[in-house]
Image (cartoon, rainbow, N blue to C red; front, side, top):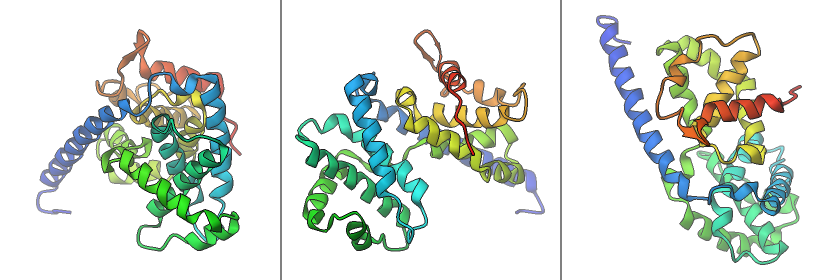
Length: 256
C-alpha cells in the first residue's frame, strides 16, 4: 500500500475494478446467443440436464483431486453453454461422451499448475477405452467456447459486487468471500433449471443477497447492487433480480 498517499491508491483500485466490470458485463452480453430463450425450460431438455448434472457429480468425485465442487460447477457451465449447439449428438453413448468431456475440461481448468489426473479419472470411471472419443469431443467443445465465453460465470462477479457493497474495504470483502454459504447458493441455483435463464451476474447478486438475508432483513445493504443498471435489467416486465430472488425464496435450499 502507498502509505504516503493511500487515497490515491484506493482511487486507482476503484478505477481498475470499474474497468474490469465494464469488460465483464460486455462479455456477459455475448453469452446470450449460447442457448435459445427457454431452452432448458423445455421438459425434455430439463430432464436431460438433470441427468447430466447427476452424472457430472458422480464423475467429479476424485479423492486425489482437491477441486470436486468447482469441477462440478464448471462442467455444468460447459454443458449449459454447448448443449443446444450439439444437435447431432445422437444416442445416449454420444451424449455421455459429451458430459464426460465437460467434466474433463472443467478438471483441466481447475488443475492450472498441476496436472489433471486424466489416467486416474479414466480408470476410476471405467472410461479407458473412450479416450479417443473424449479427445474428439474436447475439440468440438473448445471450438464453441471462445476464452471469454468460457471464463465468465457467476463467480466472476462476486468480487465486483462485494466491492460495491463494502466500498473497496479489503478486510470486509475477504471475509464475505470466505463465506462458504455464498457459494452454496450459487451452486444450488446453477443446478436448478429454473435459474438457467438468468445471467451469471444475476445469480451472483441473488446469492449475495440471500446469504445476507439469513441473518435478518437486508435493508439497504444491497442498494449498491440494485442501483447498478447493468445488473437489475427488466425481464418479463419485472426487474430480473426480483424474479430470480422470488424463485429462490419460494423454494429455499436446505443446507447442512
